[in-house]
Image (cartoon, rainbow, N blue to C red; front, side):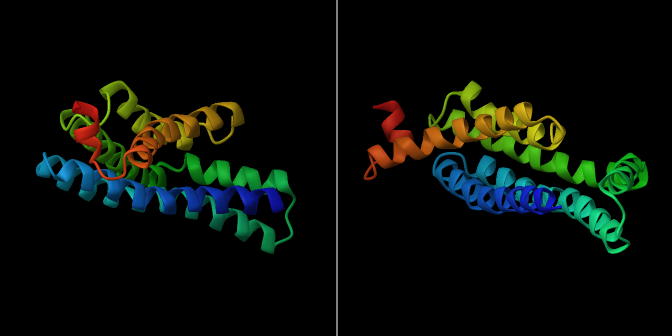
Length: 173
C-alpha cells in the first residue's frame, strides 16, 4: 500500500513540475513564434486535466477497495476493470491526447526558434506517452522519464551555461 501512495504521489508531482516547465518552454518560443507558443501552452494546459484524471481514477479505485479491507489483488482487479471501462477511458484518453498534441506544437516551435533539434524536442511528447503507457513496466517507465528529462534538461543546461543570452541566440551563435 505504501508503494502505491509513493508511486501516485510521484506521478502527481511529475505533472505538477512539468506544468511550469511547459510554461517556461513556451515563453522561450513566444519571442519568435507566438502562435506556436500560445497553442502549445493552451493545449498542454488542457491536457494536464487528463493527466490528473488518469491519476485520480486509479487512486480513487484503490482507496475504495482499501476501505473495505480488500487484498491487493482484488484492488488491482478493480483498477484493471476501471481502466477497461471505455466510457471512462476514452474521454480521459482524449483529454490526455490534447497534452501530447500541445507538446508536439511546442516542440515544433522550439525547433523553428532554433532552440532545440526537432528529434531531441520530440523526446518530450514521446516520453509523456510512455509514462502513461508503461506504468506496469518499470524499465520502460524509467526510459520514458529519461526521454522527458533529456528534452527539457538540454534547454535547462544551455540556459544555466549562458544565463544572459536567450537559448535561441545561443543556438544560432
